[in-house]
Image (cartoon, rainbow over all chains, first blue to last red):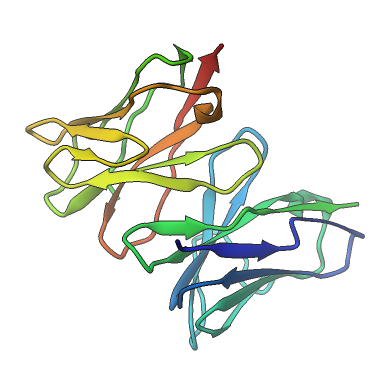
Length: 114
Length: 109
């Protein structure tokens, strides 16, 4: 069945550095991927929609210069958190549309900024 | 996207059926009713979806009211592995998934 692989599963970085998170659709092509952020004991918040070969569409209030999204191929989307700060510490989750009806989610990346 | 209302939490005994309700009084004719669940420290997983008719799959059943203003996710025999947050989401086909607060399901052994 459809599998979305997210890497790394967790990362600790120093304040001011950048972190890249990868999201791959392993057995299907995903023209559209989504990035979410989830704080402890809260629901998922949609950050942006990533479309292969075009610029991402960001939700209101999400800084596009801070959260850089690249969807260069039909199987890979990346989220780069630039100049990370402790308030960026969160659980980041990607999802892809297809190949069957419904969305497949990655297992998430826990980012801790120290 | 139309809004859904779910109870904050529910509790069930292992091996017993669980009925998770969802109210969506402002649902439009093109909104599909989706259910996803999220186990602790994992990404959500698809459970089931439907438009008008009741639906069954290997994970659960979805009962949709005739006026479509409410629906119920049915887990026929809850196990400890079903303890999760269950999200009821309305979405037009091809649109983005917007998550609400969901229902925390606790399963007692």
